[in-house]
Image 1 (cartoon, rainbow, N blue to C red):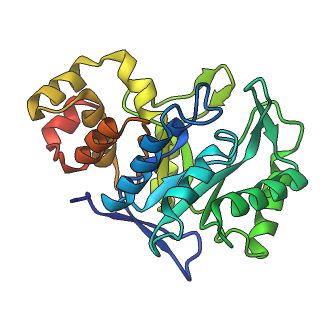
Image 2 (image 1 turned 30 degrees about the vertical axis):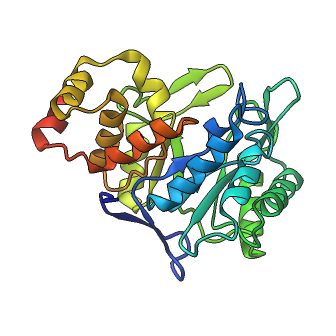
Length: 275
């Protein structure tokens, strides 16, 4: 598989992580409402196996996907892990039995989440951890971040601020209020990431873009004889060398299509059209 280069995650400058510039987000491998077991467990496991076979070496997960479902699927499908596989998880949130999302970001909560991720992923250290900001929390942001840095020093996760995960896609490049919170920023966050050479990992890039049926993107898809989803992924890869897309799907067919999007080469004229 020919990827459009690699990206370096240098949160720990002594041991930077180098990954291919197309990852896989595992959230869709859960049941309805991002909760419970996948409807097709064998297919979910096969997608994870095919991801590694395809050359993808960056997986995005969280222990509140399921709960614990995607972590357990990753371990079942891929453990013992390839040496170059980077598994990124998230903390700061948890789920209630009614599938609601709540903040879980006190120092004690964060420690328990890290330990739970280590257990379910069968790892002694997490290469990359994102702190998910859940709006409405009563815990000050600084207190949560102090706890994250303390866990780094203990060696449970490594590095300084290494990456930013934020909603971003062709059709959604600004602040968006959603049922379970607000995703702030877009282009300005990308600008900051580029200035500091920090990879931006966009989530919901297809979920927000596909329903809007942008005619310009449809024209690009037609030009290259690809799907609109593939064209959107290609745009992300061309938008900035500091973007690391992680399109997720529970369909093996769609996964294979998403991977092929890395082969699309957009021209400068294409990118101007899609501005």
